Length: 145
Image (cartoon, rainbow, N blue to C red; front, top):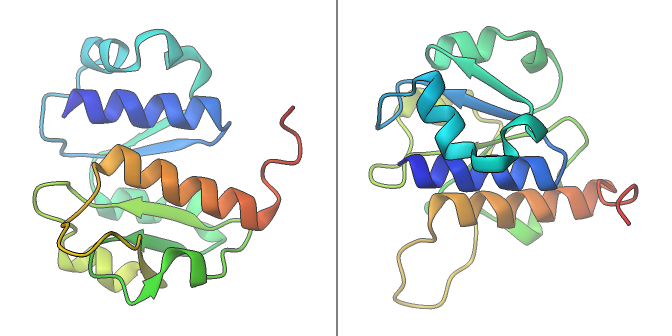
């Protein structure tokens, strides 16, 4: 959804973290749609677009660090997992989760603990929670006021 992408772009801008968008998206991701989703945070967010998961994996930025998938069925609780500098967080589709090839590529699959009986967080919110924990553990907030 464009709103989720806009929220993810705002989080990435505010936390000074690059954002990769792996297509296809659930909507037509034109330059106009991207600008509209970003609102006034677009020029403050470093965005890389990839035509598919294979292109994402082949990107030079993937040469270092682990891929850490955030999913509701993760084997590790987010706060128990030890993040390292250079880790890349992957978020699945809110409606259907991640496809099998994403699970295969991930070095770890983590979950955000939720209250009993509740299914999941909004994908942009889950990304913000996971990113904040990863930055906290790796000292990523040290340069922030």
